[in-house]
Length: 180
Image (cartoon, rainbow, N blue to C red; front, side, top):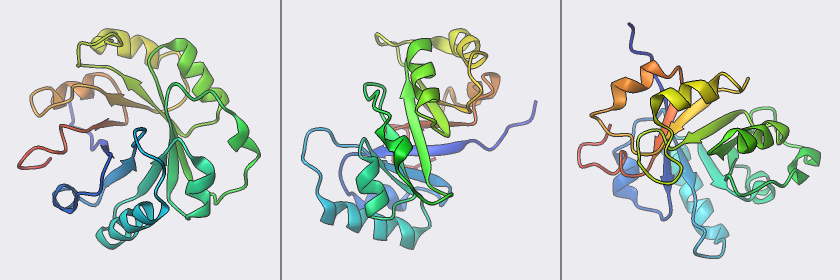
């Protein structure tokens, strides 16, 4: 079986140049910080740095601001069921990604017209734990590309080829000393 090149998505909640420097150019950076108010200056600093390093940069849970700041796209978390963005106009290259934990949330993300769905948790054994088999079964119920999320490490990275996912996302995987 061939090892496909998977898309990589790195969730950050602060601007840490040392972590971003470890990433290759194909890693998409998603800024997700629900604990603080949105700081446009910080987002613009991250955007400029990502552009300089060749990364795509997405903003979580604020599509209007992502359009205003001319970012590469936006990420819609599983708890956001809003469809207002469907009336917005944005560039053809603007990416909208969404996350889901079950079939109901997957169908909601499809109605939100996302480009791809983060499905979690594939390896991390929490309340949303799916495992490989349930992940594969849920993937059959969606026409959107799926991205694995949750508990991904260097030890289980090869198992992702069994799922048919197009990529993977995480935090701790990308913060390792060596980097991917």
